[in-house]
Image (cartoon, rainbow, N blue to C red; front, side, top):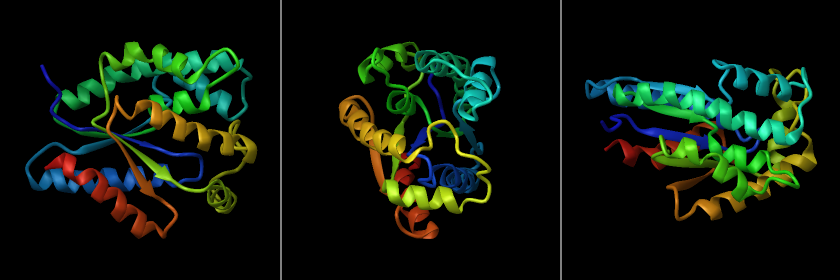
Length: 213
């Protein structure tokens, strides 16, 4: 049995606007789908908080627990294995899914001296044998702009584990390397996310709308 809905992944560094744009995109796709009598679009995010591994990753990001970097990399994969069971149920039922982060974030954020980008890709192979995205969209924004947005976001009460300027700069560069690595494996689209919200959302919609036709 083949999945009926489209699986769209939104990626970006912290402060890229990824999460808010992913939620708005979910609403846009729902309107598009329901006008055709099709099931709604569902917003999901990773790491998921619906499984123990995902909750532990979330706790580490907010510095409630301390984990070794390699442990964090493996826990992200473990959470994804659990999450994919839920995602495939939604997709087989005809729902489109917009997922805020997926395995490319694992590859960009969780590299260590002993775990390379390709090592983490191989760890995720068990996930990809079950589910691959129909498209991955990278919200492209400079490190300076992402920092400005993070500082002006009243919802951010404290800096998360990976939100230092130096780390974000490294992650930005790693994402470029990740998508170069994935260029023959996935459909990757880049959206310039430096403009005002409405302009960026329009660019995002135009990037994914052909998938729905």
